[in-house]
Each structure stands twice: as C-alpha cells, then as structure tokens.
Image (cartoon, rainbow, N blue to C red; front, side, top):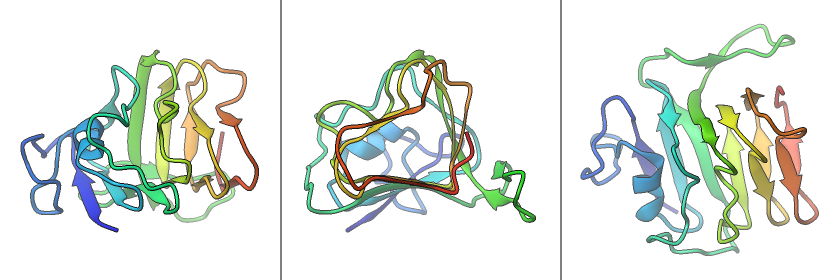
Length: 165
C-alpha cells in the first residue's frame, strides 16, 4: 500500500506523486498506482475530469486489496458539512464537468473501491459502480448529477455511509 498525492492547483503530472511533489491530475495518479494504494486529493481546487478515469494505462490491479480515494488538507478551502453535522470537514472536489459518464466506473476499475470525504459533481450517468464486496463511500457529498441515482451496484456487501446526496 502506497500513499499517492495529487493537487490540481499546485501539482505537476511529471512529479512522482508524493506529498511534497504531487501529481496534478487524478489520471496521472492512477497511472502510477496499484490496487491497495491510497490516493489523496488536495482540497485546493476541483479535479475537473473531461473523460472517465482509465484504469488500463498503468494501474496494477489487485482486487484483493482496497483502493481508496480521499481528500487531504492543504489550505482548507473546500469543506463538506451535512445538515446534521456541527463541524465541517475538509474535502476535495471531483467535477465530472457534465461531460463524464461514469468517472469511477470503467469495467476494469478495482473491485474494492472506496471514496472518502469527497465532493462529487457533474456526473452525467452513474457516478460509480460499486463493483465488488467492500466497495464503499464514506462522508461524501454528491450533487449536480443527472442520473436518477448516483450509484450502481454490481454485487453485494457495498456500503454508503454518512454520504449526503
């Protein structure tokens, strides 16, 4: 398990993806990743996707491990606060730009995909397919999707916890 970082405002895709030298885009981060990695997305500016994330350009799948996308605090400029929460949480934004069908749902995506503390908007169909047992969303905020439901389940044992839609 490796921690990998991206920061759309301050990163460069030629960087190694460390906290001190983050990648710029999610795609560049996924390209160097593997199943079981933790992908950290900075809270500085939205990650705007023009196409769904591709999992076949370099990602080394290992569907026995959890692959996690979650926010990390750089400047605290993006927050999540559900109506029932007293204290806001730091969040990163993933924006499908109303052009992305299923940002996390290519059929080759990891079967154990976990999203944590993310603001997700602009998906034009399903946001993600919860592929396998153990896929989950925790503490996310989903808005601006044009699908009837933002998630689609292809298996059993998935969780959606403390997520505001």
